[in-house]
Length: 175
Image (cartoon, rainbow, N blue to C red; front, side, top):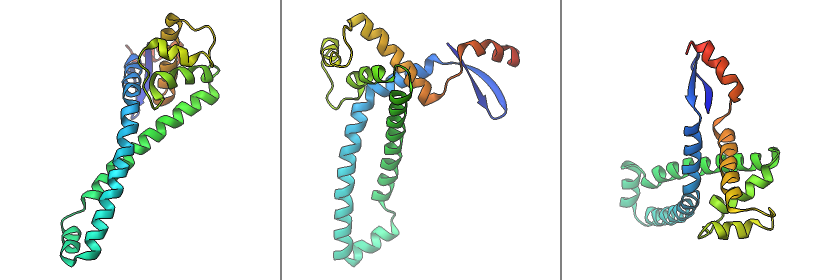
């Protein structure tokens, strides 16, 4: 599929399939990222507590922290950025769920495939979990609908231009 984009004041054409693969790769790592953020948050709290205790107990340590930079501050910045990225993703997932005509359907597929805290072992387990939400779903249908769900989420995350307009954009750009 082809999508258009605006870079500065120039229009360009790009292959939208890369967005699908980027979204799928990100979703494959979603659980790990969520786990790392939780652990990092706890570690940061410990680090702040330790630094605070050292700071209040020793004037020498206080001056070293003050003069030599603050590793917890740098760590905090990276953690905040990562959390914001996850919040944007969660917002996009929620938007897709609430507003897309098949949003609830797609949400449950994405949830059990990528988002649930515990990773299911195989497709059969995913389909078993989907049955209360989606009746009569086969393995083949699951894979097809999962691909559609990732594409819809990708369009929310990265933007979307209808395939029908791709030809007009190509003509406009002289390609």
